[in-house]
Image (cartoon, rainbow, N blue to C red; front, side, top):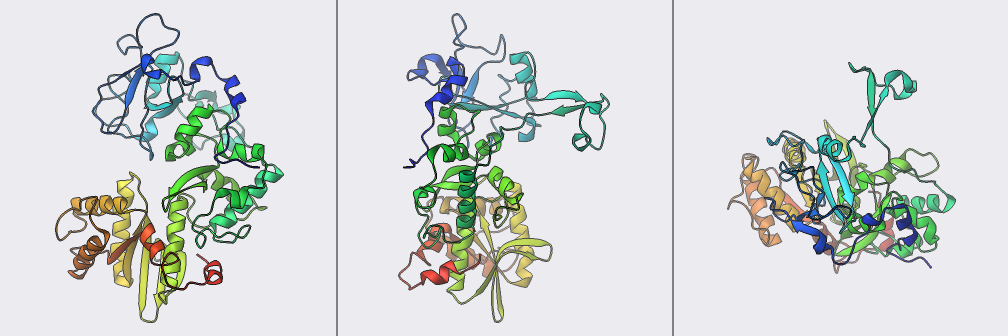
Length: 436
């Protein structure tokens, strides 16, 4: 019988050095660093092969890391840490794309984002890339423009996965389930995110294991960071856990899974934008169900003018545009979404479905602080009541475009409680037959 969460094979430890394994009394090997970053826990760790004290930055780049990192990616107010990274410019000019993610399980799973200079100084060479003469590359790998040095910098790729018969079947079910089709008698919306055993329980453990675990990562790293968005970009994993509607589900596809599946002719493709996650997808589905049973015809992932819209709902004389927004730190994208909905106001009613109340108030406050919208009573407290918050946005919208261009907003949980999770009679077949 398949066991979830997947049991990580202890033999995986054999290929790692002893110092990569966490230890129970890890505090004896660590000292907390004084960094100005709320919520982070950054420690400097003792080199197990050093005699005496801790790694200290005065002598060479130290072994350090954050045991409580952001889930969305590097906090650029923290990384790179100037005192501990010789490549940190100290002026905030670097972006996350200039940094390298480094993870370790010793003495406790931690992560840091560092510059090439840090890696070169510590390891005496840069293991993140190797320079290869232009002529040594096959034609399809040669860049359009040649550098002055005549070399090309190549970065290592993640481990490849053999797509066995069982794994292919698991991914086929995953895609159909994600797309809103019934799989082994279960529907992702109507059955409110059923247990993973329902859809994958008959597939052998050893086959499923590879979908969740990168063989190049220690099991402790996988277990600690597998639900962090940045981890799936660094590791070769295809399914990950995610918490939606207060449930932890074990079938959220990663970007790697979507790229793998969508490139194949022998598997169905994931619907929607590959960059959007399972929570986004579920929220689109619940909005589709809610609006359908409010009497609208719905269409999802619609190209409208210059924009792509998550959902468009229409009925005689009325059109609604719905954008789903989830919690992440890409504030530029949040601002662009507001401007998109502002333009769409001339063609219908703009609405937003947030993944949570916390996300809603963070983004609404950001729009207010950036002078994109004017909230009638100023910014919201994160614990503000949803119904009162909706009333304020509706009031601002009715005051005109200079105040707010969002007519109303919902959350994923609100949509559930007012559609499938409500007392109203909603037929299972009607939900399953809906294309969204």
